[in-house]
Length: 560
Figure (tube, rainbow, N blue to C red):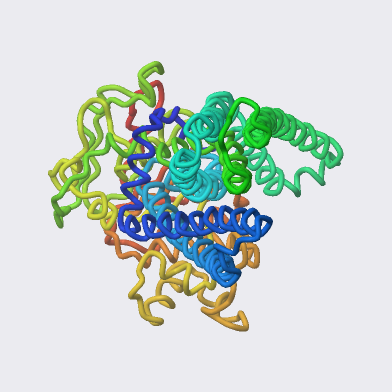
């Protein structure tokens, strides 16, 4: 097991989260504003159509033909076309904005402490990448657009009904304000905390499902299928309960909004009977009635969207807050790594969290260029933490690390990692061809270089025997090859990088004794001109090493 832990992520404030999201969406600002304009035009056409239709009916009943049918047809056709254009345009813009957000998320994830080094549950990362980011499309489509429409509708109600009868306009506008602004805000406040627990439940369920899929062989081997099914069912029930609980609250606010809309309609009908409001003509009553009914149709979706505000806020903080603890603390560095690659850990002190004990303090270690060394120790001693520090994934609280005499804090992350090729205990083979898996470490490598790396890893003959050779599809996690063959392909990928330092973190975990010995025999024969740092629980006895240290109780003890 890796010693990496999952430190508590720094809590991102909603304000900072939305500022970051809008910064990412800045290139789409004009397009987003155009989408809002399209939405307002479509809404204005709809309000004009209904008000005009009401006027035509009223005037027709009075034997007058002030509003022509052609005009209404033009309004109806224009509204239909504008609504189609608005939906097509706004969704297209939002797809692009969400795509940029996903790219930003992956970029931040790949540069942070969760960058595949064992810090985060894959289910949690997947939940942020899929569910949380998809939730954020509601920020524009379900909040910003309806909110802009509600402002326009509020103004239209005040102006048109106010030109007919000011007291009636004030009453109707007041009811609209309560239904279209106050109810959504109350709904958002009620569901904000609940939205956080709901997103957490979704993430936990996804983590469980992925975990059980990965452990399916063990589940079947121990006959635990029914127990796992019961466990998943229980977690689904928890999620469904929370969803139902939130739906009830949203439905309550929607009901209140609906009641307010009906009160507004009753006020117009009361005005028609000269109850409370006097002096309004029949034609104007019909216009007001049609306009009020149409206006309050905008309120219902806004109230429902307000109920989802809590989820949108928490989705924003989860997406923007990924790796926040680590990324901001890592010195960026601007210098290039030197050609000389001696490594020194100088009086190093590190702790994962200020409330936890130090993993080690005043640790000193020198690894000369070209040396083959091993660092061994029990689980939890901090061996893999040294690897993370050297890769500049995390930073020490005390002391420093130098590469070729230069502090790695001054060296850019990319430059540091061009000097170090990393092979871990959880090496991943992608669901792609052998060629593409190898090219990950050296995109410009020729076929001759690929075969050379495979030959050095003693797996070239196996690949040549495959029907498609380098273009053989490995399947998910390299399922189409054995564990030993997959580990050799991973070794070939590491050797292909040409990095002068090979960092091997428990590279033979999960292999049987014979395959493990063969792996190290291969390693002994290759990379003779590289620095090799082997991190392991124990040694097999076949490794060729210049120095061996044991890490225990925060100290390094030389064994030779």
